Amino acid sequence: MGLDVHLHIEGVKPADENFNKKLKVLKACHEAGVEAPEEILEFFEVGSTEEYFHENVDDGGVTVKISDRDVLRGIDRKPNVEKGFESCVSSLPEHNYRNGFYIDLEKIPKDIKLLRVFTSNSY
Image: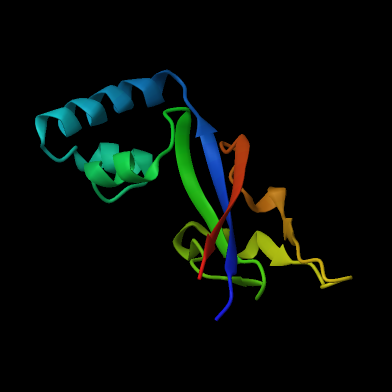
C-alpha cells in the first residue's frame, strides 16, 4: 500500500461585519458549552458549534469545502455535492507523469473571494 496524496480545495467567503457578529455569538455559545442556534450553524455551514472550532483554521471568513481529491487516482473522495461543487473541479489529462485539475471559477458562488488549496498525505 502506497502513499495517498489528497488535494483539498476550500472556498473562503471573507469576514465582514455580519460574519464578525455571528462569530461572537458562536464563540459565546462555545464558551458557555451550549449549541449555537440553527441560523448561526447554517451561516457557518457546520453541523455543530464544536465542528466549527475543530474544522476552521482561522476566523478570516466562512470556509466552504469544495473538493477533497485523491491526486494520484484523480477522483474526488468527498465531493461537496449538496452545494453543487461536484462539477467545478475536473482532472487534467495525465501528461508526463503530472497530475492536475481545472477549477471552473464560473461555477463557484460569487461570494467566495478566495480559494485555499492544500495537500495532505495518508498511508
